[in-house]
Length: 398
Image (tube, rainbow, N blue to C red; front, side, top):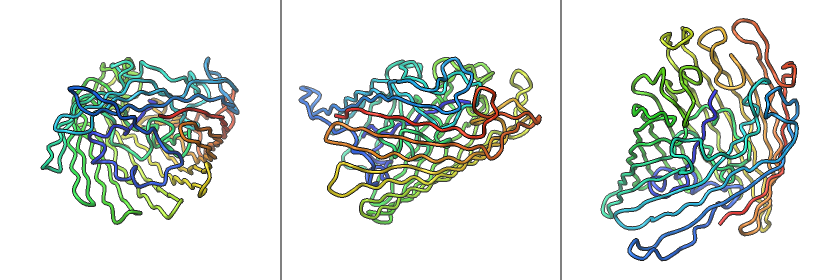
């Protein structure tokens, strides 16, 4: 399993590829850029945010870091950006930690993880890229450390309906180094990116995102991500994870998905479907996986803002079904051949730059037996099919 993270906050190439984010009635207003005089660089913008939370985890497992309760730093990010002229750039420095609801099995090493600066080989440089944006063309070209194009959910929790992310997000690629070409004209936007998916250092990963805006309230987005060549067995993902023993199918997979944003006044609904698949590969140590392995996920996200108040409600429901390539050698999420449903609700208060949010989530295993017949689950004995998690989150955005 790999805890994948995605973010689409930079305005360089994302301005063309993220129509959905601009039109959705989000549960929270994200960081608001501060204009500063960059001298010879021209006008610059500075933005960022930070948050922390206390948590309660029901049916905590046996992992050394998996505790029933505690506190953690959620996210911390500062972004400096030049978004005008022919040559533009974005630099993001910070750390983030994601809470994918119920992603880990009972013996995992740490379900609740504090934000870390060493998720990527670039260390605390979360994103850093230069963009060419010709004024007479609907195309921009970016190169550097880029955000993924996969899925609806973002990497920083204040950009999502809930602090908890789904299992769809869990299996997606994250930041990677590469080149990005974005096109935006009228209701159509399209982005293609090539680089080292999963921060692996192997340039063989292709991503594409296309969006069509039917009107101001309805946008359809389709995405693809996949390896054009074999990665491994001794490359490293996310700054130190040996793909020979950890996540090899993920870094050799093909993914397709779609999401649709519908907005009606203060209500925004976003259904999403996703399928990821890795073909058989027995060349990895231990025999690899002799059958194809994949996972299907579906989710419905929603946010509702109470008019003329600082309050809103966000949340989601999901279904996830994975299939291992061999008896017990790989798990896309909770455990081999896991099938699960999940729910998250997050009432939110925001006043200018300050916000507070209560998050409650529950995951339930519909199937919890591996191909060899062994069962798995939550709790110290791994016998529970369900797990509850609640957090109280607070932060500042600027």
